[in-house]
Image (cartoon, rainbow, N blue to C red; front, side, top):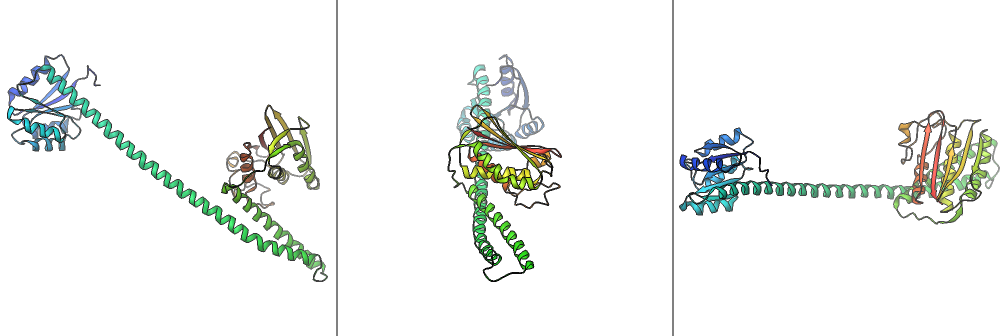
Length: 390
């Protein structure tokens, strides 16, 4: 509703001064707050509306010296499209006023047949009606904009999904097609090394060893691509079972002890409980721990220590792999678990990689309903923390 104390700025457009004077005196005696402007022609009214953007309503004769009948309303709406209009009509002009009402005017009053309350009510009603129409139009406009925006977002999402599916299909197909020939090459190199086609010189053996290692590395890259493609496809299913996390971690440590000792690193293991059961896919969880331990081993200098701890909170197991390596900057931590991202550091060029290991590890832990986080300080090492329901 309009505020009762609001000063209404009103333009009276009347060809005869008597009509204008009657409306002014009626409004002034009503007790309301009105600021009244007067015009005798449509052109004068148009100039007033253009000059004063705060005008609230127009009371206008149906017939004016420079405009008659519906043309009055049509010209008025071109000048003041957003203003409510109440027409003043003589007895023989009521049909014209009704036609203007049908075209969009807010109301009409018959001269000599309205009193103070009717006039005030008509003005208030016209302003309320115009305000409501404006709100409806705004709401419809906003609704259309929202529908359009929603449709655009849906189309963009569908496009992105199609691109993602095409990319994943390409990676899966390319990886599969690469794996077959690489496996064949690796098999023939192995047969040569084992002397199936005759004795080899030391130089030949050395070159075959290099070729075998290269094909083995390429096969690991292809396997990583296939693994990630399966996870991203949404069809990757975990084969869970109740398993002792402590035993799994110990097995992984045992398998990596030799390579850690060869680099003259120390590995310390601590658990708060001798057994912590969790519902996990053992094979995939092992690979996650192997990945984190291998990561710590690669980026920790000789003589430093790698600590693996298993903690427990009610219903939750926490596995921390802590190293004393090169560390990761804050800006790089944000990219750490992104696909195909490798963090540049003093040791990154020494060790190759696809930038898929940590991405894949996080996806597997996410599928378990857990979390994988990293905390690090440059030059002081990193902590990779896995949290799971237990």
